[in-house]
Image (tube, helix red, strand yellow):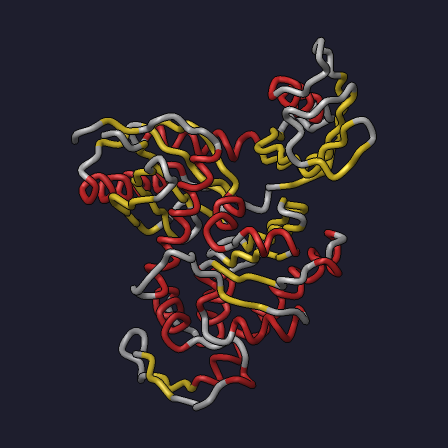
Length: 389
């Protein structure tokens, strides 16, 4: 009862996950319960069917409550989708205190000043991430509170999203019987789960290949520098398999996870497998190389677009830690090898440092949900549950 309890909700294109976790004074996380349900109301990370999404959220919440014994009242929800956009902004304020010492109130005023940008009426600011402070012309300041100065500037990274997309997330969660205390961009959550401080300092790219979108975040000098969302991801690979082999979507997804390979050169043995026929037709025999010829072009397309975004960020030459892959799409065999070939830099699969044992799917869920909790604690989210159930 003395620990802070937090609830995270990851609303994805292929699945919806919920978590209840406690965080002790040492910032150690104890997972109390995790719920998961199939997502049927989203397209490329955006809600397209309210009722189906509500039912999926209810199922995930119910399973989480049953595991944790906690009655969930409020959640912090993740947001993604190809409507997410980012931009740079600057602001400046004068330090008016008698002793000219910079306070947190001065920093807050400066952040508000950076928000004074022209945005279309259908977009809203989701996050403002300070990248660098400049005090009396001295740049490279990251923690200005307590310093002396008369003029403070800041360079910030602003994340925006569609107002309607945000409203639809809130509406669906509320119709599922809980409220939304805050919304967090999914790449922020993923980065807290699978990246460490050293990687963020020397420069690293996070590529989260989900079901409906591929989310990217570029980090350098300990802060986020660039974000992008690509509207092509794992569902496109599944659809290619479905069309290429003439099978059902459920069969295509199962085959992708069990036999899929994205890099034909790294296939050690060319195994054959049988796909049951549809409507009484004869079974079909397919081998791993044939399946790879369907999967690899789409994964190459995703990674090539990611390479263009990395170049667009301007930090291509400042990414000593290379690329960290995460998300369900990154679990397809050969993806890290293909990424090294396409991106031309070191690539590793991102796994949370505290994750031990379990299948890759379970690790993925745990990483994502631990990330959401980490992001939420940093956002100073209020207690969101009532005890006991």
